[in-house]
Amino acid sequence: MFREDATIVAPATPGGTGAVSVVRLSGPDAFPIAVRLTGLSPSDAPPRTLRRCPVRNAGGEILDTALAVFFPGPHSFTGEDVAEIHLHGNPVVVETVVRAACAAGAVPAEPGEFSRRAFDRGKMDLTQAEGLCDLIAARTEEAARSALRQMRGGIREEIVPLRERLLSLLVLQEAAIDFAEEDGVPAVTHGQIIERVSEISLRLEELLRSYEAGRRFRDGATVAIAGVANVGKSRLLNRMAGEDRAIVTEIPGTTRDYLHADIVMGGVPVALIDTAGLRETPDPVEREGVRRSREIVASADFVLFVLDGSRPAGEEDRAAYGEIALLPHLVLLNKSDLAGEEAGSRFTGAGKRGVVRLSAKTGEGIDDLVAAVALELAPADGAIRAQAPLTRARHRRAVETALSALSRASSAAGEGLPLEFPAADVREAAGALGELLGEVAPEEVLDAIFGTFCIGK
Ligand SMILES: Nc1nc2c(ncn2[C@@H]2O[C@H](COP(=O)(O)OP(=O)(O)OP(=O)(O)O)[C@@H](O)[C@H]2O)c(=O)[nH]1
Ligand SMILES: [Mg+2]
Image 1 (cartoon, rainbow, N blue to C red):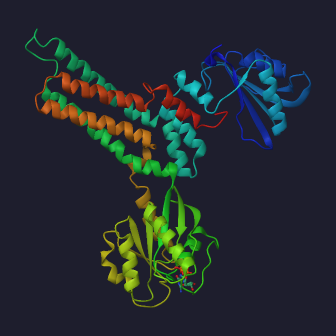
Image 2 (image 1 turned 90 degrees about the vertical axis):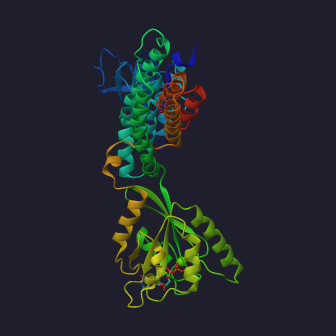
Image 3 (image 1 turned 180 degrees about the vertical axis):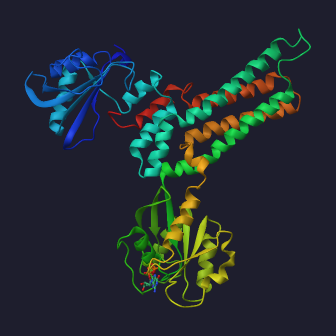
């Protein structure tokens, strides 16, 4: 029997104890197997309605009272007949029921196999399956919302019309190639090709821009707190994390090992990292801490550069700033609760973003800081938030491939080359968009994507 013809079974809920655990079956024998386990029959239970029933193990012995529900295909998650048994949330009971289902003819599902079946039966495209995966894994409300839009077909809705426009352009190009000699009026001119290609490219470029924000919602960002010793980096981390995470003392060089706190900024899951003060020191332990801090700072998505606003900025501050000046950053003037000279006035080099005055001690200015960083990590651009942004490197690569093929099509048409040339490029661009949706994706690509899903999904 081919794997596709098998009936698969897996727990749909996480392991461990809980109020309820669900075992899910999908495939041609999902109903007969569920009937065997529960004594119910689909004729006793209207579709998509929970019915109370006993559940038996492989030996026919009752081991739980449960609820069962039947979803006849094709109106089910996978498109096949699906049955679910809602058990009491005991891992031993779940395991026994899965074993009983296997004894009755089911096979254990592989990771992502339910979603893969839904995809194979056209219940969703690849971006929707990925959206489902991301919805389950989302770490912030904003990330969940973005994933939900993708799961409901947000990317598909953008891509399908663009792909159709490319395909109809291709039809015109092919007609013009085939009938060139017969008729004086070509189906499409070089100028028209350039015009259509540029309209489609503009839209694809917009989509590409949504990737940075989309990726951040999904993968999160690292934000490093940097600066010389004793400016209040650790106290700032504690303030932003809302807990006493890092040791704070008036002794310079307190922090050696970097440490991080998970917070949310503008809907983006952020790993906020406190680092050792950047300075030259004879202490080998601190020196190693500084070395590691430099590595962390260099690889962060964003840097908060802290100055002690109660004293003038010194040579050390300037040297430390030089290390991060080229990274995306914001300059913070800490200790605003103390009267003193504004160190930041010397940092006009801080650029268009300017400086944020705050006090890690009193909390003054922290809201402004969070708002400023949120803007950097996730643009407030309503358009990007309203649609489904591109979220994966795979999406970005596909759109980039389409864009560079279209740019070649446009130059070929601009140079007046025979229509075969721009036609080949337009075909490639349409193919890349088809791959994005999973329509022409190779088997290995699909296996790799669905293989990252969890079992029972
Ligand atoms: N008044 C005032 N004191 C602050 C503020 N932030 C930090 N401090 C004090 O400044 C000193 C140094 O604070 P830390 O947070 O340990 O400084 P750090 O930058 O982490 O220092 P290192 O780990 O040594 O690099 C401590 O005595 C803090 O209480 C602030 O906003 N206002
Ligand atoms: Mg510190």
